[in-house]
Image 1 (cartoon, rainbow, N blue to C red):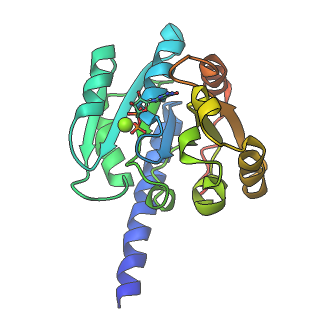
Image 2: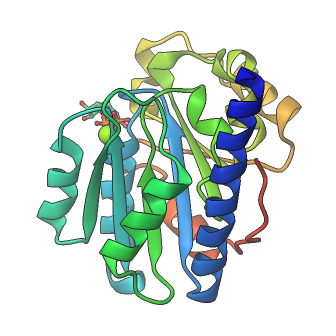
Amino acid sequence: MEIKVMKNIMHANDRLAEENRNYFKSKGIKAVNIMASPGSGKTSVIIKLIQAFGDRANVAVVEGDIASSIDAEKIDKLGNPVIQINTGGGCHLDANMIKSAAVSLRLKDGAILFIENVGNLVCPSSFDLGEGIKMVIASVPEGHDKPYKYTSMFELADVVVLNKTDLMPYIDFDKDSFYKGVKALNEKAEIIEVSCKTGEGISKLADWMLNVQVSHNQSV
Ligand SMILES: Nc1nc2c(ncn2[C@@H]2O[C@H](COP(=O)(O)OP(=O)(O)O)[C@@H](O)[C@H]2O)c(=O)[nH]1
Ligand SMILES: [Mg+2]
């Protein structure tokens, strides 16, 4: 009985995600599902990318958090359209939340929609939002073993951002092991190293984001 209920929830989510995907496709919107641990730098990366794009892209943002509007306020200060979704304890965003947010944001054709998912490396990977790009952010202080422990997150990523490279001298972070862990799961994932503190690597990530072709096929 319980299994049936779970299946129904997933089925409903997948149907809505497909509607979102078709909507994004029809408007040429790049929707980017950003998944990572709390504190890895999701909001910082979004802010740095908005600044790096300048007038090369229209960017809107969905901020997902269990509580508070702290992150949305940071985006609002930049002047970009933003919606905060509070899940009230829920560990991930779902397709229905994104559907409502996309309507309210009045997205422009060709826009980039950054979706900052709730911070954790487990649940968000199971819920398709209809996004075209999955970005996983790992940060140096979390350690190089995360791809080995949170496999499904890294398996599905189109781009893996390794943030906080400025902290490399202070942390025992084995970069070879990190790269091997990601590549063993996902040969195609682009890995881009950045530091939101120094700005290193941000222009490379911005260029990748602007140039990448979105397949608009479900990959969850
Ligand atoms: N040293 C360093 N700190 C960073 C970097 N990126 C983010 N931070 C800091 O890490 C903390 C969490 O960043 P935030 O973007 O809020 O992470 P989020 O919870 O994933 O959205 C903040 O104090 C940021 O200033 C970085 O590249 N280097
Ligand atoms: Mg954040």
